[in-house]
Length: 116
Image: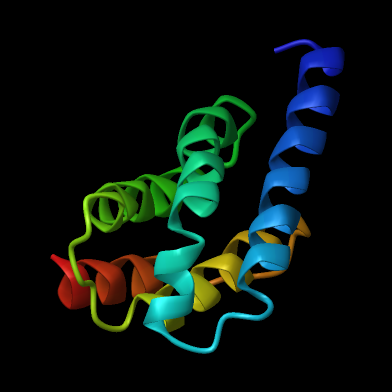
């Protein structure tokens, strides 16, 4: 990948993660996440494709897992515990983008066990 592509992609991924953070900042429960599901879902969908293209495979994989869950939310399916999952996943993505050591395997396992 070119330096320019990586620069632009990194900015887009960072901006989307930041916007997810803004959307979930005031969320205190699963209903609050449900209300913001469409906007969060759009950003997750973008992250699942773009993050791996710039070398952030783990961010892309977490976004992909969440994208599937958010597709369920979009059709009105109740997803117990989604608020905590989104907040933890957001922190993981921020850390990964900032080069902070993260426990990808643990988070992935937690999401798949909790949400199928």
